[in-house]
Image 1: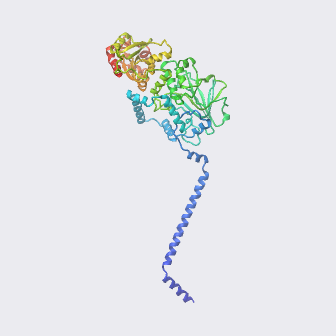
Image 2 (image 1 turned 90 degrees about the vertical axis):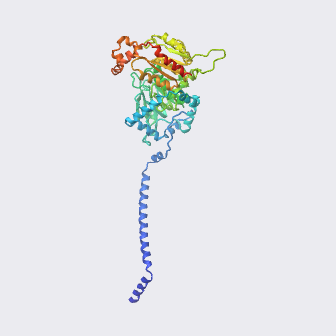
Image 3 (image 1 turned 90 degrees about the horizontal axis):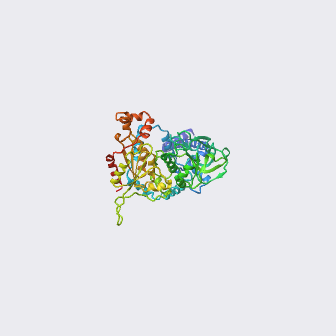
Length: 552
């Protein structure tokens, strides 16, 4: 039996050797499958645990589709719509802004920024400026189109509401720029007036926070009044509404340097246009330190900015006005101009748009100056271009004004001399609009260039004392941005009354740079406060001929 069994086994082994190999391969494959199964099971268990640990709010945030952060005011938006709109903004844009605010300035970045500013300020091509006008010939239609386009993408975007879900959210208040602060509150916003005025945003996702904001374009000035801006998570922590409005509001402050003609525009009217024009008149102004006589002077401008009553916010005791969107503060990055690359206008507006806005507000008829190639009227002589020379009565007077007038008339201009306007301001704006050329010594009166037709000539006489950079910043760059033909005439030492006071060897004449280094007091007292000019008409004549050439 034993022999037979062993024989049968040996016979089987000899007859099927391939079976052994098959079994071995099967065992190896099975082991690999078991190992793979164990690995997959382990991974799945970890994934399930991670999903269970995830915050549902984080999942919702991750699925949010960001849209471009553009602010607008669609007329029929609701508070709930506005709250939803705050959650939809472009992270990439906000990260870029945050980076710009937090990164230290490097020489390369500063050089690039300076180059960009120089390129913008140096634009003196009237064809380029007029090209901008052609593209936005009807600024009302442009504003309406911008508002409608923005409304389609988002309602009342702007400030931030979602602090918990978005790491790089835009703060409600931006205090990073040294000249002025801006706060954007989008959602349930409550403005309570009185001596301790407050503006409160109610949002369950906004942590309690508070800012003291001076809503003026130069926050560093003394005597300004602060408004408290707050964010609170619960409605019970905010004052209860007594008036509900479905329009935005802007909180601004007057005072400061208001009353100086140049500062009226630089510090208030231009910044107000930057901040409020996007609303196309559907915005209410809440004004701290309201100056009724000053507002009345510019009532036509304010009437175009807002179709609603101005609120004396400082004396608005007992009222809690609730809005879906409130802006606190205003300003402009540069003096007396708009830089669309820096100022958030909500519509890519420029100073050309601002001057067109003024012409509309005052119903000014002329958009263009005279063109000397115009056909001569039948049976008459060709019209001469009109020149206005602004006469100063205190410092920086033109001592030989009759000679300057004679030289201008000899060059081919019809000259009018104007001092302080005696007519109403509305009438004076129409008179200014009738001129083709404006001439004057550096001073606040040159602000009247805003009423010249686009393409007119602006000739600034710069007093002696290395004041060219000041003249360029205050009027030269803004004039170019308005689409004006800008000419600068620098007074020589021999043309200055200071020569007779100090003599040519005194540092006041010989070394103006040293006077600047000694402090602003000497510059303001002598170069601006106690200097008159006697124009060398022969030296001045090329500037007159250049002005004439610009009108051909």
